[in-house]
Amino acid sequence: MSAQDLDEAFDLCDRAGVLSGRVKPRGAVHRDGDWHRALHLWVLLVRGRTRHVVLQRRSHAKDTHPGLVDVSVAGHLGAGESVDDALREAEEEIGLRVSPADTVLLGHRRVEKVVPAGIDREVQTVLATVTDRVFAQLRPHPEEVAALYAPTLADALSLARGEVPSIGAPCLDARRYPSFEQLRAADFIPGDEAYRRRCLESLDAHLRGEAFPLMVLD
Image (cartoon, rainbow, N blue to C red; front, side):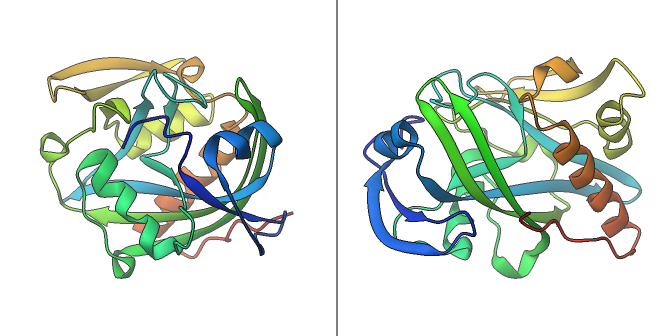
């Protein structure tokens, strides 16, 4: 599927995520600023004491936030899809098959941002998954993802908290060519700073076996 399938059908919803029964194509949804549903999935690579979080640089062909660094997997729910169905995005975007039983709920989030295509209004379900997969085994989809990164969770937290100006991270580009790159706060989607920090703190708590508060729609 193209990074910009403007004819992809979305179910419309209200600000609380309740379906309205209406369906519109992606291009019209963003143009008109309709509320619709989306999935965010944070992927943790854990092997022994080594803990890395996967981040993606969005394709430069995306109609929203092209070329910026984002959550591990981000996708819309197509018309008629459930959140469980939308986990297909993990395999499509980064080559990782994820089942509903493998996920942990971090909460729900309401996002409203002006984008070149119009206004992107999403009600997001935010999930996390832990896997022992090796980073080099992931497969970034060249139409969806420009690159993948795998900083340690500790480094990602330090950057999110503003404790360091940049962090180093293993990288796989769209051709799966490995390298090591620096990430700065300016590389990420603007306006997501508090959200990113909260998710990373929740992931850290989850790995330590501690409870964490779920994000809820305001």
